[in-house]
Image (cartoon, rainbow, N blue to C red; front, side, top):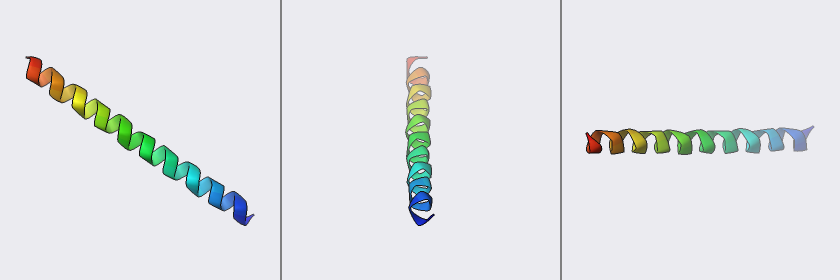
Length: 37
């Protein structure tokens, strides 16, 4: 049980970091589009 919980926590942390990365990429793309206009 304990090991499973730890693995789940690691998975959620990975998902959170991936979400942050995608958000940062989207923000960069938006700023690039604004700069081009």
